[in-house]
Image 1 (cartoon, rainbow, N blue to C red):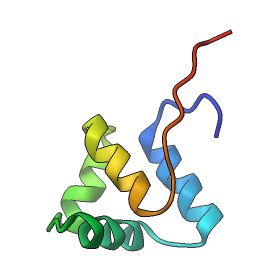
Image 2 (image 1 turned 135 degrees about the vertical axis):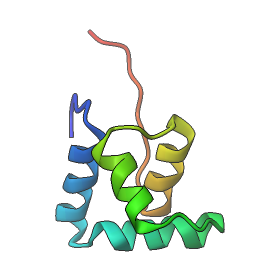
Image 3 (image 1 turned 90 degrees about the vertical axis):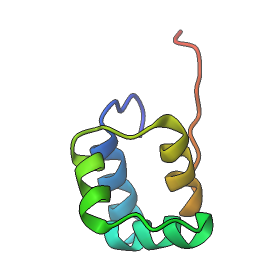
Image 4 (image 1 turned 90 degrees about the horizontal axis):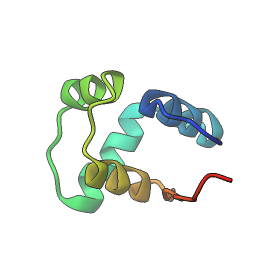
Length: 73
């Protein structure tokens, strides 16, 4: 997943690689961080690429992923 700027594509790639659904990712996030984000809100924020960085980090962490920030060469 190099050079991806679209959060939706990141989530789709994770779903494909892990053979899970967005709902599963949301359930993991809600459980791990004791949140109550609704599926419609989650899908809207993913589809619109409107996710706070800290929330994205937590969502990815809840399914075993992290963000790697590197300087361009």
